[in-house]
Image 1 (tube, rainbow, N blue to C red):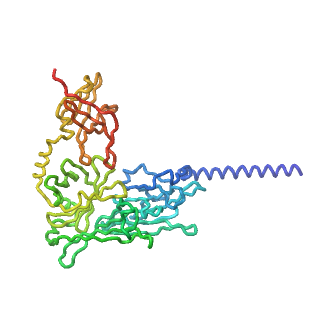
Image 2: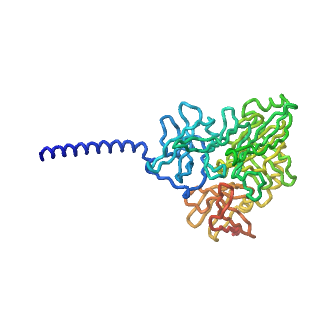
Image 3: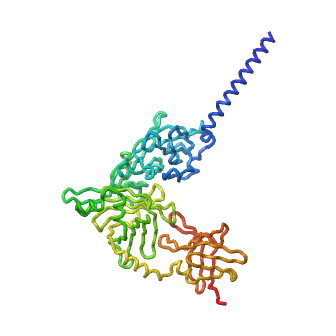
Length: 494
């Protein structure tokens, strides 16, 4: 009897070992596929920022983005936003993907399951956007009620601007997306963060964090002119949706069919060639006029007023019903985008609305908004020459070709190149002037790794010397000091 019991126990033990072995093999094989999702525990809301934005660029530029949500075959990752979307204090992942068999971008909602220590794919939502370069994804508390919502924008196949806000709702364990607002326009659509204090609001005015501004065009059937329309939407607590709050219309100018045909033939090149040149803000003062120079050949747009000169690269253009929508990037600050909404008023007159973009949230830059008329480039050059005698950083620096530092070190300048000699060490590089929000800076770029002169500097004159103060320029255009000042003295003649 004991012998039979021993044999039975031995068999059971052997079978148990086999079960454990194959179970372990199965788990290990699964871990190879989802190991990233199992090893990462997301932060709670208190440990992270309350909002995050992901802007989609071409895939090659965003090759470093990853997701902890398991993707299916045929899905290409475009963008990832990590934030708490279901108010459980755990960060979830909102992912944008392209599918090989569908032209439209899809949004995937991955909710974090703390028991499984993994993200679960609960919703797959097809957007209205197929143009990847125009697509932007964000998670924000847009209604100001403490609940984060999914927001995406972009251009439709008809080249209309599109905006949609979606809120996650759970019911008996099932998750679904509720549409808070859906907007489409032949003009621009963007978010504007309200800066007014609660006490300053009117009696019935909604107390909300964001407004949605929509620019569009309407045709006046009586005379055929175009009217510019700005419609704002704000959160309505009673309905639980964004509702139309105000409408402002600006009468336009009638354009003859022949005039319009010369400019708008359905191609970006024709309209861009029409814009090419210098435009003067019609409401500018004579002492400090505002100019915008469209340089289609070099793909640049230059904003100029007095000592302010900002250069933006012309990245992308989308034709609209009676205008064009241009996306630009600051030549100095790569994360600073400016979107230019151009509406055609006549053969020599346009209306411009500009928004500076640091992500999804965009605030209008009203200083450049208005009606512009085409002007003579020669007059603009003369004005620039008149201002060139002012104490700009580049002129102060180049007032001498040789400067000394700490008596024995020598800085020599020649045609944008510099040589800095200190003892047995020699440093070479280039320098140039940069303008940020009206302030002039000198940028040194050394050919050496461990350089003495490197980065941006303000330049001030002090009797016979120059003071170069190292600074850091942030993405919002602000400047902060970042090191000890360098005092340069004029080189004494031997």
